[in-house]
Image (cartoon, rainbow, N blue to C red; front, top):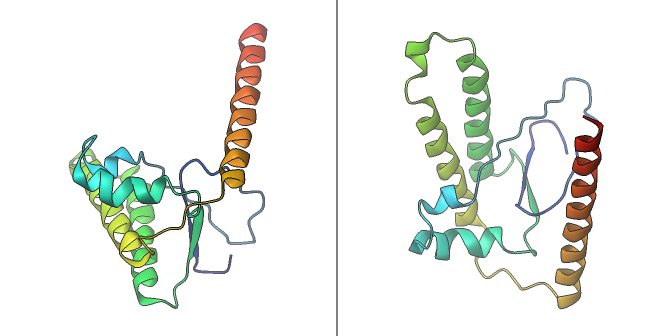
Length: 154
């Protein structure tokens, strides 16, 4: 990634951040996909969330400032980042409805993203699905083993 860029990483895709360049920032906005559909089983969830979040063929997208719609997303995320860190030091009165505002920003970002991504995402091959499932299973087993070891030592 280059200066001024961000990356959207879809749910269920393992990733790691190892090194940052001097002056680089790592900021992560994590949210459940059900937040984007407003309630379970909604038409929005069925049409505008699950086809994208469940698509193994859409693992990630780099957002670049050269494209106007992506520049807009980057600006919103920077505003959110600044607001989050300023909120931590603000007086309680200025924090009113902060989480609601952040939720609105996230759903607005989601709208911009899905409006510009091909909604006819191709289905991945069966072998790609099996590979992804094996990776997830290995990860779950590893995490379970780690937590069991931690609980035994405590």
